[in-house]
Image (cartoon, rainbow over all chains, first blue to last red; front, side, top):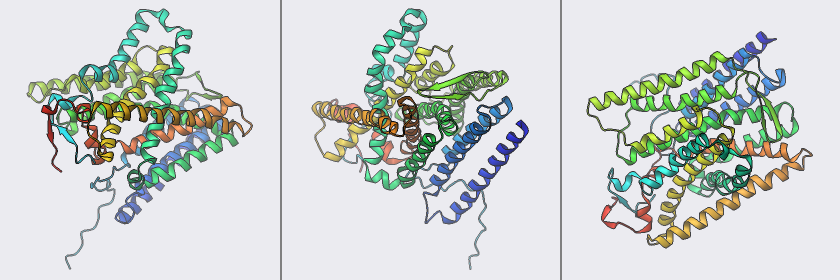
Length: 107
Length: 367
């Protein structure tokens, strides 16, 4: 049971990271038209955290030590992620780029 | 924002403090230290009766108004709503859904919702501590380079990890009003590692500050390090349940202090009134009255609305409080960024500028 739980959490975490990654890609391409999309990622991370805890509460009503440790690290990582994706107004710094844009031909 | 306001000369004593050194020191950390020392040296002062007498005053007069002041600031400003449409419009829906799901599933979703709040709360406190540190550094015209910022961040957030690990240790069951929630059941090794992390990050920060001093770089004024030292008292000292309950009040007081200064400057700019002590008193009273009434609406009235679902008032209070406070954590992380020119300009001003005192210290800001 514990192994399954950890597996679900790890896979869920990876899936969440993948979804966030897709948003980042979309953000790179749509940044000019949709500068607030990073807030959507923040909201998404929050929802992911709530779902993660709901999963934990639903399945075990409390965590064993390994699951609890995984959740603890996951929570800290998501909180840090949320800080990373919140741009202040007037911040003309580009979003942290995970993709190198191809240099355009001068022609 | 505040283009027409006179601002004090950058970096001098006139702008180093929001009001002045003694009052800033008292609000930002002095009160926390003093109460801690009294509780430690005179344990009989930690009486439940005493705390029961003063806590309603602290909660309704400071803590709950501080939550409302954030909402008031965001939703009362069309400019901020336009700047942050996702934060202003989408996040309330997310937390409302979380609250509704908690009412629908009191045994499963509600404990997770409360757990999210319990984990996020000390993280949010750490964010404010770092924010105050950077604010006072800017006020002192002290450049915080990337390396120093990283050392400060590590030292501050290590206390969040440690206090959370301690709260989530094995065999501890938590209760927040009418909701009981289990702990993350962390092994004692995690707590030991987290404690070690605090010592290492503090040692690294001290070492870095000593290296800076040897290189004759600008020395950090004491007020810059006070918010961090205060958080160390809150999060790393031996637990005292009564003191821990007061930490929310200390945090709220810090917040209201800075928000009050910002409000005075923005209000003066918006109304075009002449800086005077009368303006400071009138506007302070009006602003606090609005925040206190708003605090009652959020934290007294809404739980009774939630009780209509058939749950107990304790359960409704827990869920509504979590929804409001997590929304506050989210909004706070967005609207107070010093990189935002709209927040930075008035946050670096002083009380003297709105009260019309000490004109010799002031210079007209370039528009």
